[in-house]
Length: 258
Image (cartoon, rainbow, N blue to C red; front, side, top):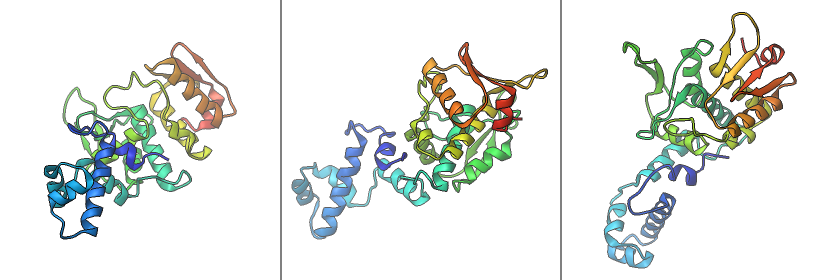
């Protein structure tokens, strides 16, 4: 299940390697060769592995490429290759729901940010990060005209890259045309929690009726897949119309949407 070492590496860009995963593999080859041949210098290592010796030199001096550092952090955090039935997978998918529905991941730094709403408070969002062992802070609290956001205080860039590897977009979300496939990798109970979080962030709360309307600026393919998830976890009625979803009062109660 995502995120994997390969998919995390490919969230990085590199001037030399079109595929950053190849850089990870070359780095590992260099380190393995050096461990087996401790007296070999950069020229010998480079010739043996068909790599430029100037590239090898830094890696022999313990310069760690960014993709490798990110992978190592994800491994240390326990975020890599989660078992679909694990608490880690549930926590990652839970945070993914908050980011997709009420947050963003900037392409510049990959640090995820989630905005509290009328149904989803700051504590719930902080708890979603803390399930993954990440502490948070609130920014923009005293900035007029800007929404408060919950952001991680450490390893946020790597966590954001994990979420992107799982299918979250960077920058604007209006072009996201498919629901992340990982939603179907986890147990139905986790998928239901994902749906509940998404609807609580995006659902319109009507004063005079109990139905909930989810209106999102997404391609129709995304709306269709979101409905498929809701149909999978609910027995009650969900309908699609006008670039959005209408969740019946009974379905909203079944989902636990206040």
